[in-house]
Image (cartoon, rainbow, N blue to C red; front, side, top):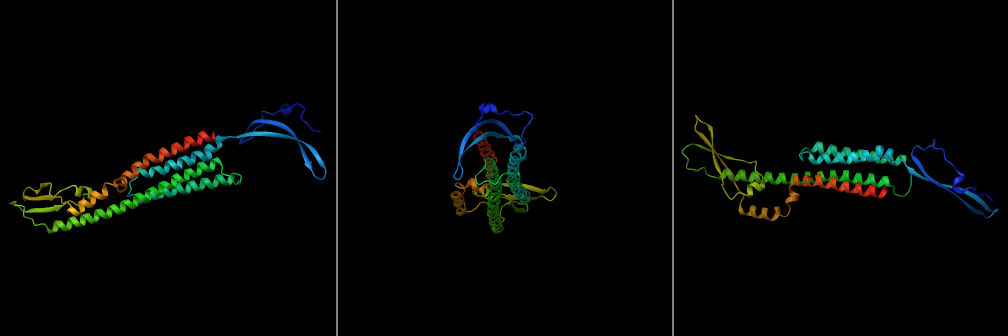
Length: 264
């Protein structure tokens, strides 16, 4: 019969010996009987070690780079929405980098069937990076739609300006100019010819220019009132980026607080 003479005190550890990735927190000894059908019962001695992983190595190699990649994906929210190459290349770079980090960590870890704590952190970080790419896809689509509407609006105003008679009752020769830089909201807010300014092109010539801002007809105004009030945030792509600057960092900080409270 085998047994430990002094229990846990039967073993002593050398402080000079240490593991590179783990710290031995405690150990305890036990003894049990093992039964074999061919030979009978046998006595066994067991030593159970409780190990704790050194987290600093994984902070430098895994957690810190993943956090930087997520923060780098937020930079696209401050880039102009019309800078398509810059924002697309930044999004693709962060997604590919996160995929490389996940692949490298899984290659150095045991191939187990359950989900590890580091897997949760990396995959949530990957989702944040991927959502930033989808956010720009939505912004770019809405920008294209709104630019198309503004282009149609300018064409319509240009057609209306060509049909207006120049009977202003001014003695000098006038030139009617149309300012096409106004958006649909600015044009719809006007009820007619709300402002006329006289701009002198050349004092010796005594030629003057009159800038006339046109408004849409009543039908377009009613359509604008019905649609813009409900979807003002969706149509305004600047607003989407503004909200993303607050929502993405706030959600990621909340996730980190929950994660480190649970696994530390």
